[in-house]
Image (cartoon, rainbow, N blue to C red):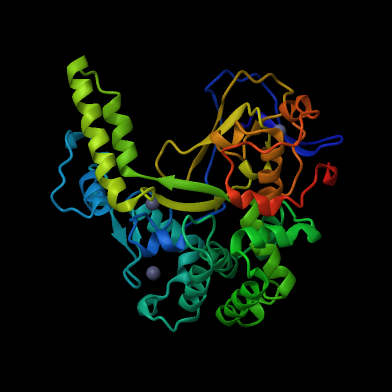
Length: 394
Ligand SMILES: [Zn+2]
Ligand SMILES: [Zn+2]
Ligand SMILES: [Zn+2]
């Protein structure tokens, strides 16, 4: 039973409201994604993730050696490798060789989309329309990645395979609708300067990949833009890493102080080695759409946060502070650094990425602050300068 409800709040719109008191760190809910997918470059570079749930498919030793590009790196305390108990369960689709962490994931993928999505031997064929579409996307969207056209490809397969197409379509539509004249900002953010031309190219490649009556409702220019918009504004980033899972486990071991100092040193060395070669790209990365989690509004003083404690795509919403029955449950769409910035800076990021003006208690309290931009801000925020605070939408 859920202890929250989705409700209209006058003057604010749809919101998630607690129907009981939650203590700090209490789990509010857990949710599997409606759809999830590893990012295209992340997959192309060999970051090993289950094609269904994104669980890491490497031992910590394999992971560190690949990231460091050094087959001789050693990792201590391998008895605490979180993958060790999984390795024997790894499997793959017999036809296309896509890899899964378990028979369960293989079966779930088959049940929901992979029967029609399986490309068999064409998976390695550069001229296959799906591969052409993915390559077209990759040429427009370099790391750090924030989305992938392959998430939309998976949605199409889910639709094609679904026996309840109208229900599926309604669920897809329940993701926040876009306000039409704001769409361009999202595409700009995802596709960069030449977004109109790129959108056209991507659209043509999409239509090539999804021909026929089955997909007619998705292959109009507007429907395609809506799909791109849903991905751009509603998707939640997912990162999984066997290395960070291992670090969490070994950091909790009951060790003596000297042992702890030595372990910390070894962990620092490992991160230095992998960082040297892989830079900041250490994780399996992708994104997902969550029916419930996507209904949670943003606040710059959030009382909840999304966590991924199982190292897969299951999101666990946790209370960050005590929540009273009747309180709205809010998460932050901004990362920790961004949250510390000025109100003006925060609004520019939120406008650019999510198309709304934040009216949270912190923003209201700072409403009279001058429109200064925080020092640490990136240059690319300047492109959002055309958002003025009188642009308020709610
Ligand atoms: Zn899996
Ligand atoms: Zn397959
Ligand atoms: Zn705010």
